[in-house]
Image 1 (cartoon, rainbow, N blue to C red):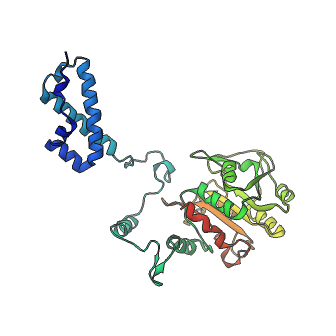
Image 2: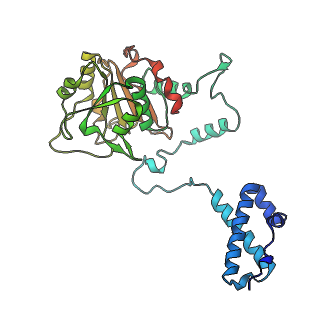
Image 3: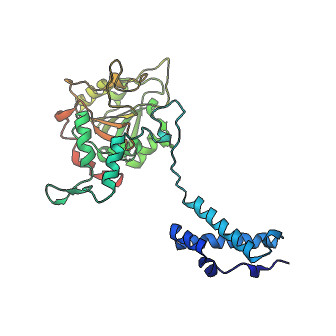
Length: 332
């Protein structure tokens, strides 16, 4: 017959040096919970006739060991270094691009103490946390403004909520895509409050389809890059300059969700990965960009930024008010 009196009380167990060490490392609440779970397991094992638990010393050793294992597993960090052997250099599931040594050193330097995250040192007053990344992104791209949020779906939803809530957004049927993580363009649009207006077909959408759909309820023309699949053969898709020309003609803003890409430029290469058409569809310097916005994933760990297209500079229409992006606070 099992002698459950061999199981010490939780308070007695807490007085033992090894358990005190666990409390110091993991905290009292977590340690007590682990001890209770361990004693319950020991009680169950004794009831089943575990002969190894015939002395108090054996019982205490089993409880302490089980509690230590449970706490170690519960507090083990889920984020671990891995080796990327996939062949994909910028891999979303593996953290995208590793940070450069200089960036890691800078993060460590600032994170050790307080920082001017949301404080304007020149004015001696509260500032905005967006300015740090915005200034760099604007310099890098030539854009008028930039906002960094969690991912490209958040960036797209923010842009739609700011510019098209309650109004129609024209999108090609061939661009109503789903990306990793289950984000679907129609769902993102619905959450933003915008109204989806599909045009064209899955494989063919022309500029004339977009133009025919523009009406007094149109808030935006949206172009989405299908970065994770490709339709080949009998296909057609309006280029960004073609959509921008339509936007200028009807005074409708144009936005492009570029998905992924990089801002670097290497000799003999396009500004984005080979095989995509992004390098050919950007609005070029010297052209009339009109009211054109860009939503893209950058190749950094903080990676999504809705911004005015790099070629737009100061000519972006004032009807697309920068202040409309103030709702970014909810997505930052």
